[in-house]
Image 1 (cartoon, rainbow, N blue to C red):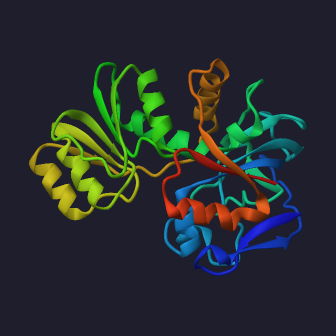
Image 2: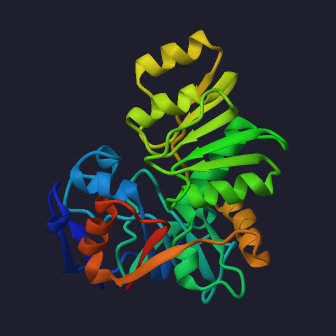
Length: 290
């Protein structure tokens, strides 16, 4: 099978096409023929040697987690899917998921069915970003009427955060990376930018509110300033969850949730996708199509 490997940590040039043996599913796993692969900032960070490289590496390894495709084989004990089912998910994160390939294995409970009428590209773009938001809002306990600030609302995670928060009937303010943030107006701030933006996001949270530092976590100084104002700081890391994806899929099926795909590239162009993501300004998701 065609796969893209990280042959060493570094720039986009370390993403190299290779012919590998397809993986075989063990008990409770399925083998999926991949039709679409979402590209995420964590892919870029991990390729450089940061991100979740400590768990995905050492090189060579096949990067990527977001994927959508068709079940072509099931391991012993699988009851959730049968051959021919269209599925999507983000298997094994933060361990290596191997999604930049024509075939991938995954624990069946980490996947969900793609609803009728939803294409592979849209489904493949969704899991990691949507689950990041879903699990963050669950951790916060966001309630109807609360004010959520989404900093980085134009990005791959941010545009989904705005939609999912509105589905929860929250009041949402979305800002871009370079936008000046309001001060102390939000019950919850979702920081999807990181760096100095985490400080700005904290300043935008009312005393007693919640700061969700998704992009890069929060430094000790941020924790200290938050504690002095009674602000709770969460640093979530997304986990695979097929049952939550079932609920997200239901929102896709009704059109309540839509994913914005800005470009689809061939699998062999993975390095180009990484370059574009690193350049910034991507208002949505990039997808590779094996």
